[in-house]
Amino acid sequence: MDIKEKYMEDTKTWHVLIIGEVDVYNAPELKKKFHDLAEQHRGDFVLDCADLTYIDSTGLGVLISLLKKVKEYDGSIEINNLKPFIHKIFVITGLDKIFTIGVQEA
Amino acid sequence: MDIKEKYMEDTKTWHVLIIGEVDVYNAPELKKKFHDLAEQHRGDFVLDCADLTYIDSTGLGVLISLLKKVKEYDGSIEINNLKPFIHKIFVITGLDKIFTIGVQEA
Amino acid sequence: MNNDIISLKLPSKPEYVMVARLASAAVANRMNFDIDQIEDIKMAVAEAIILLINQISNPEQILIKLFVESKGIRIEILGEGLWKDGDLSLEDNNQTKMGRYILSYIMDKTEFNIDKGLLRAIYMYKEVGGQ
Amino acid sequence: MNNDIISLKLPSKPEYVMVARLASAAVANRMNFDIDQIEDIKMAVAEAIILLINQISNPEQILIKLFVESKGIRIEILGEGLWKDGDLSLEDNNQTKMGRYILSYIMDKTEFNIDKGLLRAIYMYKEVGGQ
Ligand SMILES: Nc1ncnc2c1ncn2[C@@H]1O[C@H](COP(=O)(O)OP(=O)(O)O)[C@@H](O)[C@H]1O
Ligand SMILES: Nc1ncnc2c1ncn2[C@@H]1O[C@H](COP(=O)(O)OP(=O)(O)O)[C@@H](O)[C@H]1O
Image (cartoon, rainbow over all chains, first blue to last red; front, side, top):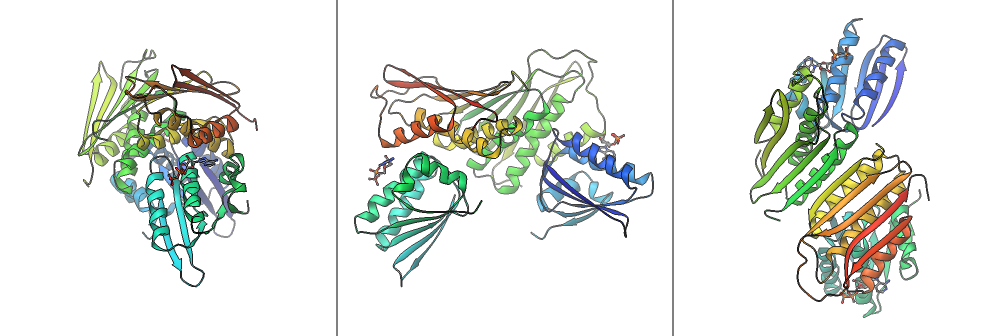
């Protein structure tokens, strides 16, 4: 897993690129990273998942945890460019209803 | 492993794209493919290995076997775009001396 | 490949879940499962291991057995060795519920072996060419 | 991860070499080997298995044991089960020579256990951060 982030002052938005696999091993690191960013700037989050190749239930837990965090200051999360087979997991778990989601063209 | 081939009438050359992993499991299939092509047209071979991600000793054996075959009709083999870590295996085994080889920029 | 058995034993730690994931994907790949089904099998194996190791009292090792059958793959994920002490309860929170739910959804059959409040093993099956 | 042991048992068939390759790569990845070293380990495990299964008389199963040590990875590749009948000779042709040569070159230490003309096991070691 690799993370690249950039804060957009004008829109008060964190743009975060999530690359590779988010799993039970590195999910805690991602959670800390997200919470650090939200502490640094109380912005909205746009997650670009074009290069996210795998996410397990602990990774999804991290997203939910970030959502709770940004809700504290009325922020939002947008999840973009999900690969179809990863989008499927969001649908199965109903998380497609609590996040704003964009899917890659197949 | 996936193979895409095209015969160039003007230069009497087989252009073959080798994609993915060549290993002990699929090497026999590759060997048969190469020999079929050499039977079809007694041409030179240009192997594009830009997307070759792995090759083991049995895969190298297939290349040597093809070389013997094309030598029968004075043909040649050119191996292009090898990834550096795969090129290393050609160097270790001395095969860089019996094939004409091109390596990808790192 | 029919009736072949592949087994893998790992320490019960998050860092090794990837090992099980990749090994299972490789077996599924050789069995002609399609790409989406390979992703399902990979994920199911991972979620099963996560359920076993994330218990308050968890096993020392995880044994993964993959049975190549004519129509599909049968998978056993077993906790082994001394179970570390702790509350004898399968902590059932939203996280584990989500894992169990994903598992049941992406595999054709799933069975949980719970003994004295501890999850001891998970048995799964997926058919080649199924949905 | 120190002193962790990962073991994998496979039928002695070409289709499963990929399983061993990916599992070993995943372990090496978690141990902070760099990308080139991970490729080396992957290849060494594969070549060792190929040497075992390509003998005229070969074992039923291959057992791969990966030992995570503080400074590197120790690997044992063992032939197991009934050895199928045949000439009791380690067929030593250009192909096997090439495999053995690659193996010895990319690993820091390599040891071949040959008994009654049959290759029974291969022991290897590679240091993290070595060349
Ligand atoms: N479908 C769900 N709906 C609500 N919460 C969920 C769902 N699935 C998982 N969760 C929980 O959300 C958690 C993240 O929130 P929580 O752990 O309470 O936040 P934090 O750790 O940031 O205090 C996940 O780890 C998980 O336990
Ligand atoms: N370094 C090498 N030099 C010469 N031959 C080699 C070398 N390494 C391997 N070989 C042999 O070349 C073989 C291919 O030639 P061979 O089997 O004789 O041809 P064919 O199978 O096409 O009749 C490989 O399978 C291998 O046994």
